[in-house]
Length: 115
Image (cartoon, rainbow, N blue to C red; front, side, top):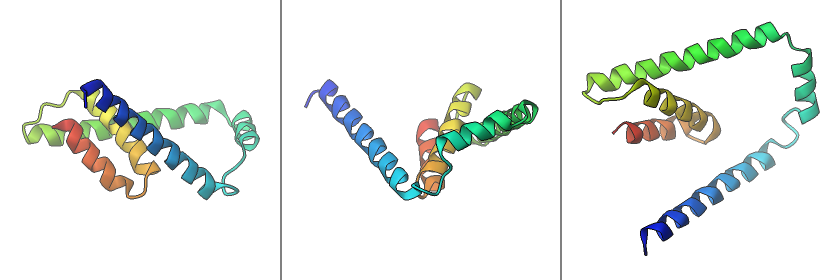
């Protein structure tokens, strides 16, 4: 099998996995989550200042976690630029909150990306 064919096959597997997870989440969470209009209503009535504070604090938190990961990896002699550490941190966060056993999967992802 040629390289482009293999990468295309891998891409389709990833797409199928993401769609399956999305369908599973939709079926599992149906009726347990607020509707779209309810979410938009809450956002319309929220104070923009508090939303800005929350977004800023979240950005600081993610930045601190990225710096921590970077420092730990650099202590082991791994060169890990801050931009790459931040992208891995954001991906780890998404993985850990969206997958079963997400913390373990995200740790494996981070180690793979760092090496």
